[in-house]
Structures are given as C-alpha cells and as structure tokens.
Image (cartoon, rainbow, N blue to C red; front, side):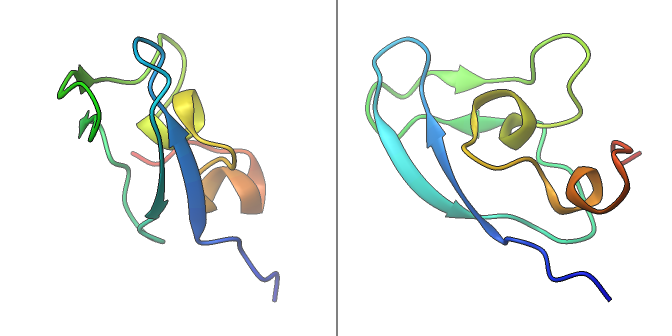
Length: 70
C-alpha cells in the first residue's frame, strides 16, 4: 500500500500567501479561501481541486493513480 502525503502548502496566485493545509484522502476540495487576501480560489481548468492547482503536493487520489477525484 502506498503512503500518501496528506499536507500541502497552498500558495495564493494573487497575493502569494502560503498556508499548510491537510488534504482529504477521499474527496476533492473545489473551493478555498485565501487566509491572506480572502480571495476564493477555484481549481484551474483541467485540475480536479485546489491542491492540484495551487498546492505543493497534488491530492491523494492523483498521487496514487494519476486520476482526479470525481
């Protein structure tokens, strides 16, 4: 069984604020409010969640088999 990384550093593309967040292992997080500028972040086109778009580590489903959550 593969061990997944469960924390990711989310970086806001607008203000550059960085925040370490826990990632859910069985779901995607579609929205995230930046703790710095309060902007609501959404995944980039083609990404399944904010961690795949703005995180230092992709979400656990992508880590395990490259497939986005649904």
